[in-house]
Image 1 (cartoon, one colour):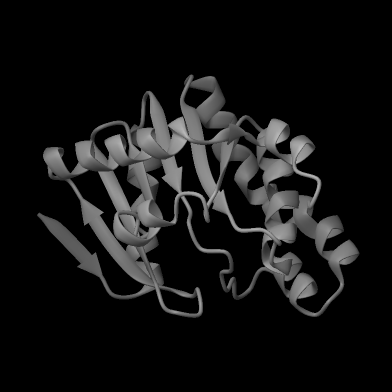
Image 2: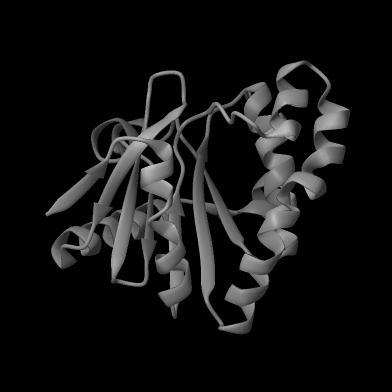
Length: 188
């Protein structure tokens, strides 16, 4: 039903074939309010309290994603992310919002919802972040309590993938487009 990979490297090495074979859409759910991103220089600047330097480094750190975004655009693949937020924002989320602005420029569509308003959904049904590539393959991320990736599950069972797609659709139905959300919430 699902195959578990117990290290970040063994988990993420499965993604390249999914990115190459996707033809219609990639769906992504992230639910934590903080993550640990070792080796990300922009993240490290944010953690040290230098948000301006962290934001300035985003294009440099993310430049390796240009080819992926360009390839998805050329193939007409829709990359959609849903993200629950808790106000007030953590420092991590303030930084992540700046990263999302960058992602949107390259074609990703991002939708935001209020995590507190839908807490039951996120505490009962969305226990892990996940990504779905068309209806072919899904990945469920396994983070420890601090927000550091430990590994994850590769899902190829069609009914399980369909359940993730339905869950994504439910979350998206209660979400606002990123730019609208950002401009309408004064606390940001």
